[in-house]
Amino acid sequence: MGMTIAEKILARASGRTTVAPDEIVVAAVDLAMSHENADLVRKSFKEIGVPRVWDPEKIVIILDHRVPAESEKTATTHKAIREFVSEQGIRHFYDVGRGGICHQVLAENGHVKPGMVVVGTDSHTTTHGAFGAFATGIGATEMAGVWTEGKLWFKVPSTIRILVDGEMRPWVSAKDLILYIIGKLGADGADYRAVEFDGPAIRKMTVASRMVLANLAMEMGAKVAFTPVEGLEPDPDARYERVLEIDVERNVVEPQVACPHQVDNVKPLSALGDVPVDQAVLGSCTNGRLEDLELAARILAGRRVHARTRLLIIPASQKIYLDAIRLGYLAAFVEAGAMINPPGCGPCVGVHQGILAGGETCISSTNRNFIGRMGSKDSNVYLASPAVVAASAVAGRIAHPAEILKPPEVTS
Amino acid sequence: MSGQLVLRGRVAARLGDNIDTDLIYPGRYLNITDREKTAEHLFELAWPEIRARLAPGDFIVAGRNFGCGSSREQATAALKYAGAGAVIAPSFARIFYRNSINLGLPAVVSPEAAAGAEAGDELEIDLVAGRIRNITRNLTVSAAPLDPRAVELLQAGGLIPYLKKKYSSAA
Image 1: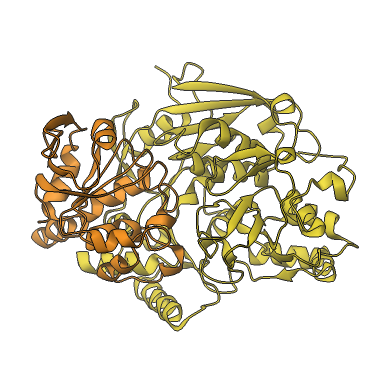
Image 2 (image 1 turned 30 degrees about the horizontal axis):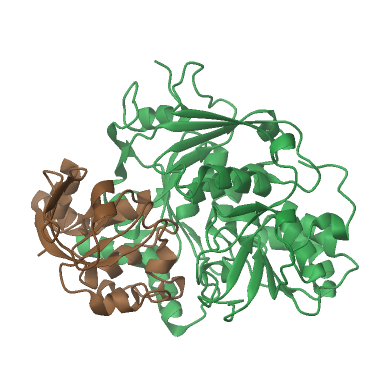
């Protein structure tokens, strides 16, 4: 019987010829990624008591959640990680100013290859399915087990296949497509499952846009999510739990917005009415890449951020930061009155660099709008595409980019 | 108390669907790495009173997709070290579920129990048989029996003691 992409990878990694949904397999881990919570992993690892990690070449540590250190406590955490990395000979360590957001850095530096089993102590590790990896989030203690043994048990997930056809309309992006899908399937619509995105509309997307789909598939519970990768196709007779067909041109006619306080509370932008915005955030592992900044620069160039709105822009990595400087995007942002934050998670996790006060509203290109996610429990976060975030910053309320700018000639 | 396969306790709180890990444990406290200390911030944003109400061994009953969102293990640790004996829900988000097995906090899948139990009810949970008896209401409902692997980890007190034993006896 044919296998899906997830089944193929787990069969290979567990030394079997075939696997089927619900079987438990023990798979060899090819790459183990952690960020600041590497300190938690380190503590658990020390408690287990083995002297050396299983393979220092397969461990990557990237500081991103609190960079640069916002407190003495975090500084101590960072220091402990640096010491551990040195003690264990872990070469792939991206310190403050050397990397950026873990998922972007992992991708940019070619750590992920098709067919790999990748685990990360971050839920958005699903992002690496855009490169053909069985990539999923785990907790810190489980990661200590991986650092010890280099393997992990998995229940083979069943797969939902999502086929997307049609031309993307102007101002409709990968973010709008995936928000639409999450709105339809719900916050647990893909819980425990693998997702395969395919179809002409997906195959036309840039790698950065495919990463948006795999990244946000986590918000409907997906264990892993794949976009097409050459040489890693599902078998023609693979069995799917469900096949979903979407005509993006017909189904997603305008930008989508996830309203407070759940990512599956998705509405078309035109249904929102007047929503004044105190803060706009452009960044994160979901939408802080160069194509996102480029779109924002087009909207913001020669304009000003609305007087009642603060715009925070966070390039996802040092590399993107540098590219954005060279291309003049950052000058356009600063001239518009935006603040540029250093590459990292920024305010998305609610720690620093743009915390919301009670009663404030934020439009954000990030991935979660849970109660209190970005600050006060009485603040509201709306999630949208980079273009909507930039347009809303100019309008001072949640706005369609077409209000500010003519549609781009090329959309993908 | 850790490692028991039949649990008895009271329902301390009943929560809705899609309770995310930010609600269980806010992101601003992620730099707390001492597991016991995470308990101080359990449900701090929305329901800080639950922590005060939790007696050791009490249960949390919740709706679908409990623990969705972040991979933060502190969400599981905060529940465990605040005294929760188990969480009962119709379904769990997958990372939370794995974290629970690894930290030795039973996550019990039971749509029936989750629908029928109210705060204050006294329950007896047989994790291996997959049975929940609501003593207050004199009702017995089924639950998903715990996977043998999870039972092994639970009895060891979690993944760390399990691996510690494995590698110290191998040495």
